[in-house]
Image (cartoon, rainbow, N blue to C red):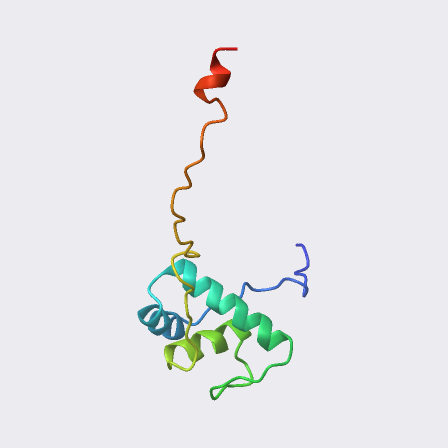
Length: 102
């Protein structure tokens, strides 16, 4: 019989109650992942949570709870940078009727 290693780690699980309510606030999975990722990075750097937390909560759970409570939102930039169209510039042809005959 082989000994069981104590170094085996259980995978982290996101609590569904936070995930489901956060998905109602941010329905796009790509946006939700990026908002959570940015908030987790802030929490790791030492920023304080803006909601009540438990000692056993993971950073991702804290971010999802903040989103589900409406304390953390996102803002999209415009569709793209607006570049006004310039009016057409008409340039006279360098080949005038006199130079074409040469």
